[in-house]
Length: 396
Image 1 (cartoon, one colour):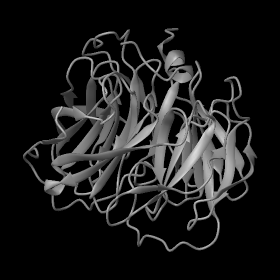
Image 2 (cartoon, helix red, strand yellow; image 1 turned 90 degrees about the horizontal axis):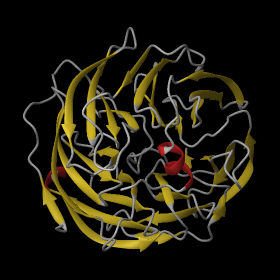
Image 3 (cartoon, helix red, strand yellow; image 1 turned 30 degrees about the vertical axis):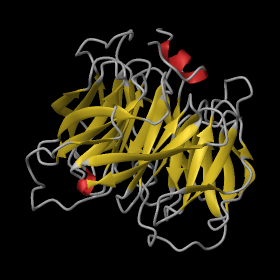
Image 4 (cartoon, one colour; image 1 turned 60 degrees about the horizontal axis):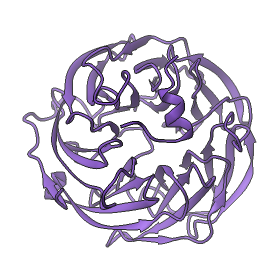
């Protein structure tokens, strides 16, 4: 098997502008007969009014159990929604390398990838923390998963083999056998890449399309998911500039724009999105604010009100803050702040969007920030929390 995924896993890197950029939206509008549905991926914060803070909240932590110093499974913790203080409560064992986590829309079931040669996805019932079983993803090193907003399908991305998979979810939250597997066989790999490397698989805000970000082919693939059969039909492709290495896509709440974090190119890109066709149009690359060299951007978050975006920079160990302008069409770089750890692999908002969590892989820690609703400024929320090879934090 190709060793690219193990390099990404343990080292976190691959071989390998202006402070503001705008892009006009693609033509087209949502059809009037389809209700909008929010993405289930934990990358965009909901409204601050979504929930009122009340008592300790659950926090689930992903790790590489097979890595030196790694955890024993999915870490369990709680956090104070006011202070951000984290308290460890245990571990869910029986999941190999749970490097990415997602929760069902009904909050009853947790899903984890098993990022190993024989890739798998696992379901865990949260009421009693029972592992409901695992299913093969049909590929190597799955590194991302998300639940389709309807709650009936699990989407996963196999980094090692450059493919995306679909699994059915039954009424209990358990997973059925895979219904589709699509490998990104074209276009050819980008500069310095040895093949396709699917890094993310998510649903558009209106629920019409599912999009796969492939770092190896410098491409975002748009599919239509048949919600009866669980099969995929490709409807569009968007090429980034050669060597950009797109890693993570985050939509603006308005649904007409999205933002790409380019891991290899050390840039972010504003994209126009046509909800009717699923077509993504990639705009000009712009700065991460981290200076020369490559900082390996990892993940972007957008606030629920669509006013600010945050980028995790692993090499720079920082978070970049952007103002979102022109109804989503423009990012304006504001500042970068130290993340308080080493190699921030993933970031996530609390349900209200008042806290931001960063999982820091190389320092084995989770850091927390208060998010100012008016300015978007980040303020550290006390001491970091020790968590073995922390690569994902999922606050509920």
